Length: 446
Image (tube, rainbow, N blue to C red; front, side, top):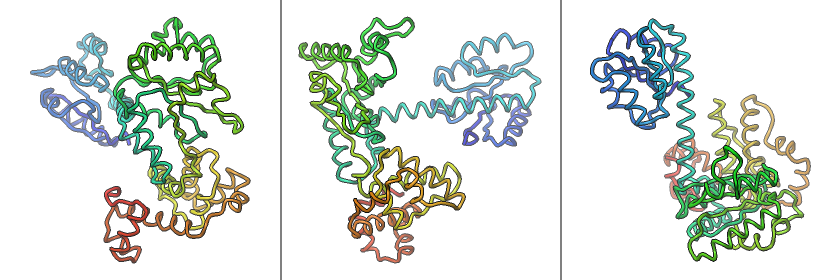
């Protein structure tokens, strides 16, 4: 919620601090008041979770000096200045320095509230983008996003760690919705190029002439560096590599050859993502053989969801909990039959399809209507036949449901073993054995 952020009010006049604080508090915002800029600076730091409203005329450090200190600390931190009539030219100069906006005394509280609301929204976007950039540069965080304890996912994470250290070019292929872009980010973040430029571009988003200019140069006017120059020292991720025209594939091969002849580590790493949706066409069918074999010397294929077993239930529960929190309702509890249906579904859209289904399941659960089976049928009319054709032994359904039940109960009780034992009516030793069997750790729920 935006209102969970803090508005720092800096003014040497107590009455002014109190009136602003009361008005914003009535509007639902958290406020904190300071009688001087020096006192505020003691609490404000980069990534400050909020905004600042400050007077300009103050003893000691005035609002302009305070603004300059804040801008040096975090240029994306919104500062709204309060100015007297004669200080308007100064406030305009403050806007040039980096102030978010200013209000002139006597000001309309509604205008101040509107400014605060917009500044908080801008701050939230800035902090979210900053967190995302940090996340995309942290290999351990990205690997944790590749959720699942199935053997195929364990193997994928191990392969990512191995190939990331090798620093060679990589080809990633596989079905739509399996997380190929996430794998590419993880490869970069786990390797020696971590912290350097990761540039992801789509070969399908431009015609041949534009692609040639953007990739090899000269770049279009105003475009800055070419993709290859911009990614130098880091990673160039070529999404939709199958859309790269043959002539440009040849130029890319020449670039790779030049790097190999130099005998030095490659100036940039190429990660190519192949997004062919036609099941009868393979990546090697659309790429020049010399380019394919240079990229596919290291190849990763994220597994389709239908091969990941009980990961399906783990992912569904996590997505459902996230959407339930977003919509302010309880996550749907799935029955053993619904768990079996989720495990048997063909999932042509893979994880992306599962995310969509989890959101719809939360929405219909909030209304008290529908079922997961009906949602699956609406996604795939052939589901009943697929269930019959790809049936699994009862033991697999029982184990999957048992794991899901323990997982749900541990989450609900935040890792309290005593509470889980009481609800499931099982002794400590049995619970420990089953958690070990299903790869569940109490520390994940604390």
